[in-house]
Length: 330
Image (cartoon, rainbow, N blue to C red; front, side, top):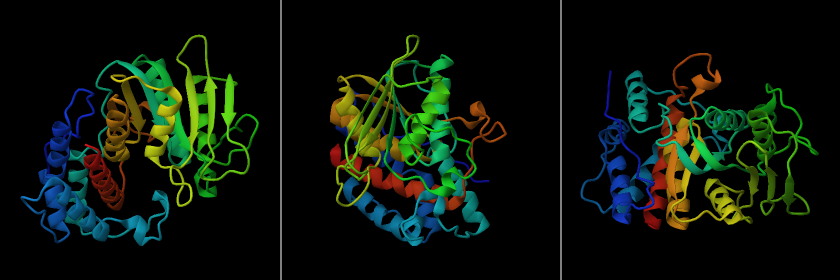
């Protein structure tokens, strides 16, 4: 069985230099598991290219071989058509994904944070991530001054909620990603009613935003945010938009420690987005962790959640693209 040493992600330390962040990007991209993946699909990672050109090349290569979302018609991640791969390639993808940080969840690197950010996603992921954030805080794994669940007005699809027993969000039916984030926060932290609600007016569009705040007497304040798109004429809000909307609301100080919680599959690309948006945008120190399904009973077992090979390849491509953006900011 193929095995690799773990490959670290670029640092999110507030004191790290731009050269150190760039070195982390290059180290991840040029690591043996990624080189071997490229070779397995008929390519050869170019040597001696400047980092920006290397990432441009890898972006183009991955678009051809690992962009299953576009092949399936620019669908959501859970709607990708499965592609069959040879057994030896399946084994290689699993080993590479493990080494590159998409498989094994790890605990938060430190105990004390100023902010804990829970990222949105598909409905079930919203519930799992908010539950895990509550477990970290209420179980004493981390202490935080503030928690924020970052979502958007992405409409829910029937397939996302068909087998979920979800209570209604206060005052409105469950129609959007942010509604499920709010349900997850209320279930995980045991909150009943928000202390404050603010939102844009009019029909829901890519311009729309909302903030719901809970302020308990015996825990950190929690905000549930629906971010607007920064390019509302062409797309809905993405992860980076939610980071910036949160920062505009909370105004984190330079040097604040931020812990981002997502699913392990998405840790590499969402960590790089966080470093670009919050480290270089606001001077924060950023750590990113994936939820541990065993602590939630989410998989019925004790090991990490496993995905299909095409899902790992898709998110390795996402990481390449996120690193390309990070390199532009660094």
